[in-house]
Image (cartoon, rainbow, N blue to C red; front, side, top):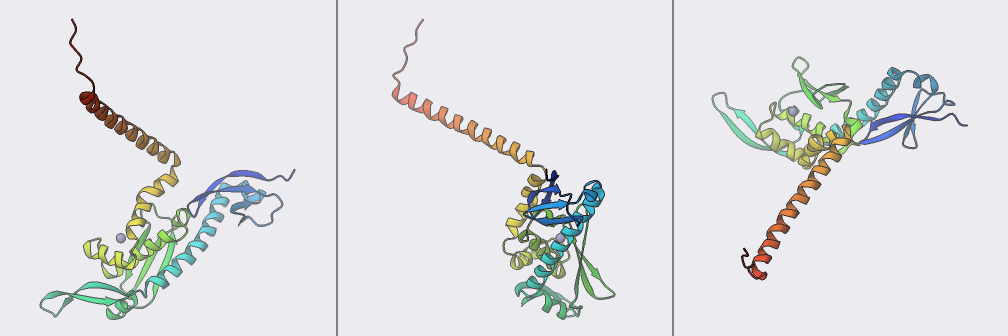
Length: 240
Ligand SMILES: [Zn+2]
């Protein structure tokens, strides 16, 4: 007997992956063959499992975010900016990247980011007014649900806040230019993640959709059959 034993599952990159105990393993927590493996010491301590899992996730998420920022900050987009001549404010169309904009407003080129556990936000954008630089915060759970595409949407969202602080129409237009598959990612966060968190809700939704389709089909069938009946069936003579 090998002594290997399945402990449960962990969410990673949008999949529920198995976590196993491997008694012969020296490392506390490793990932290979698309499974997580812990040694006996770690298996006995659920806090330690969570700590190791979070550290593993943070390393992977940092790499994705770092690449995402590097790629998106130099992308040139057409945006409308508010300008003032001291008396009046007017709109001006410009084509520029996040980097060029930071230079324009005399801000530091440094964009720091941190990863943390947040209850409500996938990402947060903060301005360090003293240092004149932006700090972005990302939710560690992102890596549990996606392998990168939708994480880059959150990166783009926080970068778009460098141009616009609120979520108005100008913000949305800038974000769409910076990240054209914006809508697809928004659907992912609104619908796919709740399903991943609670697979049963997805199944019950499918059942409801199936029942609605069945009901509609029955309705169509009964209307059509009555119509045909009206045309082809000879009128039934009333009987007493
Ligand atoms: Zn926002």
